[in-house]
Length: 312
Image 1 (tube, helix red, strand yellow):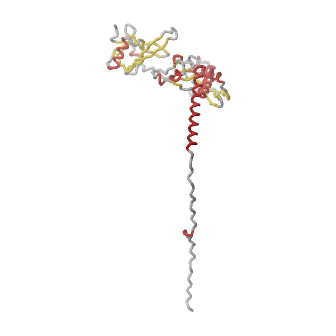
Image 2: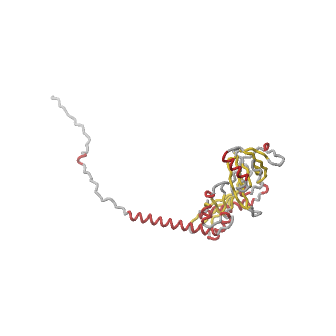
Image 3: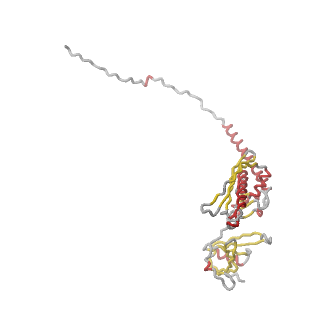
């Protein structure tokens, strides 16, 4: 029997003919033309609104400033801060007066439980509330505690009235709410004066640079009760004010030596002591001074009474 050769043809997968595909040609469209005039008009309108808003804010600030009294604005800048850099904040009494005048609405007042410090030596109170004016609302939280001398007055714990701390926290919350609502935090002194507020009426609560303390063993006095010391002048700063009791003006120079100790020199700028100290600051030559130790605010201050070369 003849051999019968059977040829098996493998079934090959069908391969799509890429050439047979229908290619879709993207439709050509005209580029979208944006009317720049409309955009410019919107920007101009927004700028005009912002300018009008800024003027309105200035008018509100102007009205607020005119309704504040002496001591309503408080400055807490460090001693020696240039006037151009000093900022003032509205105090609690001024904030309450402004809120009543403008008709600020208060809501959601909440008193928080008394909270003790980890060492159980100090406690604090806190209040929160919402403050609204013309559809704008700001939330504020105010705290006050016995650890902070601004609220406790530096008294011992047994002498502190707990209700005073509670009231201080309430007023702190109110003040924060009003100042946040009207943007009355850190107003430059130059801005206040430009609005007609006398900067002399601003309450200055300076964070004083108290200087380095001298070891008590070195504070031995001479027969005049003064401590003698040879120093190198590092800095000499002038301060002026009015005595609240006598209503008389005073001039004080703060003398800083190279060791970081600060001394007070009560003298006019044209006094011989100040002139000599200024010369020693410039040439950096050592100079001998004599000062008395004056207790003040729970610390000892050094008040210069004599400067070498200024005896006459």
